[in-house]
Every structure is written in C-alpha cells, then in structure tokens.
Image (cartoon, rainbow, N blue to C red; front, side, top):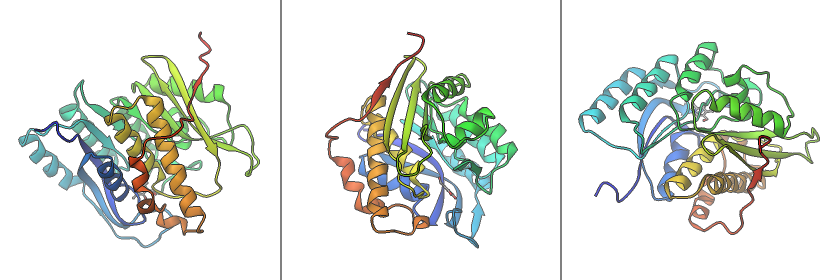
Length: 298
Ligand code: PXL
C-alpha cells in the first residue's frame, strides 16, 4: 500500500505570504501526484525578499521532536528534499535526517538556498556556507543557482560566463559528493539585457554527461522560483522521467509562470502566479528543448 503514492520529506520554512518554500513545494508536488510530508524549519509571516518587518519563529528545537516521532513511526520516503535553512544547527539536523532516512533507493535532493544575483540572503553567513558544503556532500542531486554555485566553490560571482567555465564548476562541485549537479540561472556571454539567455546546465557524474536548457532572459526576479524549479524537477524524476526531460519540464514550468506574471506587471515580491499554471504540470511536454553538451574528454 505504501507504494501507491510516492512520498517526499520536504524540509523547508512556511512563509505565509509570497509563494516561496512550502507554499510552492506542496501545490506543485501534490499536482504531480506526490505526497509532501513537511518538516517545517521556521514560520514567517512572509518570505524575506523585499519585505521588511516580517515575523519569524525559528523551529530548530521543535524539528528534533518532529523527526524523533517520524523515526519511531519508521517512516520511509522516496525523496528527501531540503531548501531554505535558518542556521548552521538546522543544516546539521538535516544532515542527521539524511543519515537516518536516506538509503540507496531514495533520492536526496539539497537545494543549497543561500542567495541570488551575486548576494547572500540576509540570514546567511560564512558559517552557513561551510555547513552547506558538508550537507551537499551527502546529496544525490543539488540545485544551486549560479550565485550559490559560486559560494559553494569560493569563486567570485560574475555577470557573464562561458559554457566551459560552467562545466568546470559543475565537475568541481560534483567532486564534493553529489552525483548530479544542476546549476540554474546561468547567465550567458552577452551582457545586453534584451538579447541574453538564461540557462540551466546539469552534470551527471556517473555518466559523465552535461545537459543544457535555455530560455530568453526575462528582466525580473520572483522569489520562490528556485523552489518551483526543484519541486517540478523532483516530481518529474519521481514520475520516472530522465534527467534531461526533468530539467526541461522544470524550466518550461518556471518560464511559463514568470511569463504569466510578468505580462500583468504582477508585484514581484508576491511570487509568480502559480495557481494559474499548476494544471500545465499534467499535460505531456509537446517539444523538448534540451541539448546534450559536448564533453571535452571525448
Ligand atoms: O527559497 C526562497 C526562500 C525561502 N524561504 C524564505 C526566503 C526565501 C527567499 O527569499 O526568504 C524565508
């Protein structure tokens, strides 16, 4: 009976307004036919991007009781998925969670949420980066954006990059432990706002292959789109898709959500118009846009 519906343990905060973390993860995975079992890390009135004066309760102490009960129940998950974490101690709790509930047949996905557009979020610091490097070493798949990839490697953030450089970063990050590394929001070589592309580039260390999906850059940034991306990716992989199809579906969904919102000049801090787009998760993708990148070793 337990195999009827796949289960994801989702370790994220609950931000009441603004469509980030659990309020994005739950609707997406539920729509894709997957059960979400949350481990809440904190409760906030809103996410922290472009809101001030938000209320915040840190649930680090509570998380240990929540997880202890799950251990007694001997719960099993098809995937463990962590996102925004509030403190170095929380990262250690997630790491213990992975040691206990992770096994060779489930998927450990860590989205090392730390910052965007070259900057760390207000609650992040050097100690968080050090702990996050340890956590990513235990993951099967990680989904840093370009800024987070730079912080993981201790590289300087840049506004432009080349495919060769991103491939080098992907291989170096995968050497930290994860089998699959997916870097999102990769800028390209052009700086002109209206011509440039935004890409997702993935590396699978076991097969030694790189995959890329690109779309035209839209000059706006919505919080929670990273959570939406990783949620669709997980849903797609749990539905049995291959890695390139999963990175493609996730990119198409997020692009669709951004375009739906941008067309209305929707206030960016409220997140994307998720609810208007959820049903597109249930139609088959009509065309695939992914490419296989040349591997220089071949
Ligand atoms: O993953 C985005 C996110 C999640 N949770 C909180 C945030 C953000 C981004 O700003 O502030 C609390």
